[in-house]
Amino acid sequence: MGQRPITFLRQVVALCTYPNLLDSPSFPEDAKKRAKRILQGCGGNSLGSYTSSQGINCIREDVASYIERRDGGVPADPDNIYLTTGASDGISAILKILISGWGKSRTGVMIHIPQYPLYSAAISELDAIQVNYYLDEENCWALNVDELRRALNEARAYCNPKVLCVINPGNPTGQVQSRKCIEDVIHFAWEEKLFLLADEVYQDNVYSEGCQFHSFKKILYEMGPEYYNNVELASFHSTSKGYMGECGYRGGYMEVINLHPEIKGQLVKLLSVRLCPPVSGQAAMDIVVNPPVPGEESYAQFIKEKESVLNNLAKKAKLTEDMFSKIPGIHCNPLQGAMYAFPRIFIPSKAIEEAKAHKMAPDMFYCMKLLEETGICVVPGSGFGQREGTYHFRMTILPPVEKLKILLEKIKDFHIKFLEKYA
Ligand SMILES: Cc1ncc(COP(=O)(O)O)c(C=O)c1O
Image 1: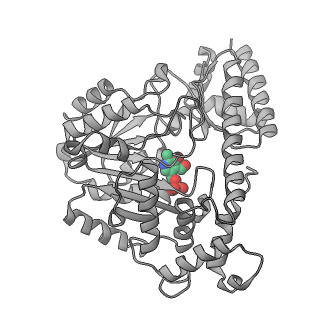
Image 2: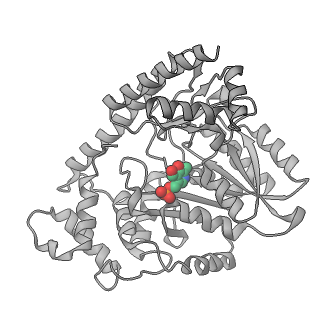
Image 3: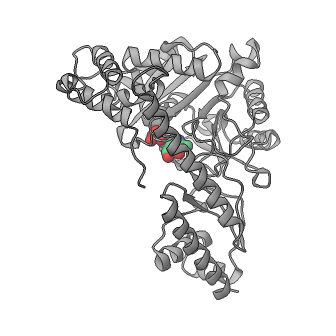
């Protein structure tokens, strides 16, 4: 997608990978200092050995300090931090630990619709029950506690709902939940004794003015001891998104709060089956949580690169939203965060009939036509789930601005012709 990697992150990983470079004058001293510390944390001064299953100690300490800074001083304990192979690995591991029972007592996992398919896939792989609750499209994909309660009450007839998952900022819908929404969700989880899974991999990707990322952990603490001593919470972060976009390193962490010590033991045992997360991914995670600070040699360049990526993403989010709002038969909520647009598309009944004749969901039919006629690949809303009778597609905003403009123009022309053809 043309995004340039963050120099400092690559420098530190390069130094860790090939420590002979520590003598090279081409690398800044602050990168060398980080690399030496990570290498010491590896024990054997090499990225090429296994680490403890929970991850390198000094990196878990850096993650805990990052969380404390992010959350305005709310304490974080390195012992509650687990480094993971991207966020995906942590999400699957926690779900594995939480799922049990048979028949009506089988664990139900609540996930919003539309959802990111990692959740439906993991739930299905673990033979758990997926309990859908719908985000409110008319209200910019907000979470609504009445809808959560409806879903929970209905699900109790056929399973044992124990887990509530929330992705914020959202994939595929790109919304940033308000503080009030998060408080309501935490209160609901506390009342109903649900284990909260907060997928916060897009925490740096907030673009709209008036929107702010609020971590579940911070709000949980601000709601008082009754909540923070009782609500079980796992939250996830990753090197894959944000301004770094380093999804190939497979770095991530999870922080788990209020997990019973015996279950914690089981979690470590489960994680030890995969030995340890990639050590280069752990090093990359360290740079995300421990970047250059004012006064350090690399600070100015780091901030310049970080802001350039984030400002560009904000520009592309606005461009995409503006363009979709001008196309007849397309409605797109504001792109407040994350990396996607999820516009609603009107599909004429003639096209729906033709899709049925081809045994395809109507939005799949639409996306296949778009692919065939323009070469543009977007994902049909049916892949994420959507309210019956509504159709969407998901498109990423990652391409460079000029390319994105061309893609959006092509989608516009295609859509208008599609409406005319099936009118
Ligand atoms: C909401 C969400 N959670 C988790 C992931 C997985 O990220 P990772 O690369 O850290 O495994 C993604 C990837 O797109 C995502 O969008």
